[in-house]
Length: 258
Image (cartoon, rainbow, N blue to C red; front, side, top):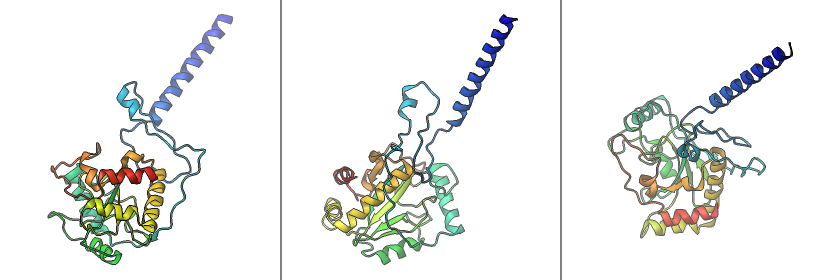
């Protein structure tokens, strides 16, 4: 009788361990890091694997004991983004990324400046709102945020929706535009922003908040000029970026201030 009881206990323990292992494996399923909802703490997700590649893919999380950066003051000024434009974005995503969806899954933050085409915030907003073809395709270009020279942060598009702002990463990237003319060179323009205190302070506050909200590491805060070299870059049509806004050396300087 004693042997029977011991055997039953051992079987029950084995079954419990198996069930626990199955629950852990299934709770960590998925092969792409989705956009994380705002939270005071972010939990790392680990895909079950013993390979070195899988271990390096573990999403690092902010320390839950440290306070998150505060959300900066943001003025909501949405551009028209109704069903027609959403359908255009989904069709674009199907052609270029292979998935018919307008949903954004954040992995990157891409920095831009507006160049000479639109020298003021109203002009930039009107340009993005117009939904005119770019490179022969719809929807038109846009960015999620525009930061004016006085430091005002405007949000034009929800963070759940893609914007066309950087070829090859629109399905994974938040776009931040800054009001600034190109002038003699892109490096010169980047430096104007970096030394314009009201504007760069707002940019840094916005980037810090987005990083903490979506668990974006510093290495994935990049300039438009760096997008083609990102490991996240992909485009089924073979398109490439030709923009020079936010040079690598200037992005490194911005990262050092985050």
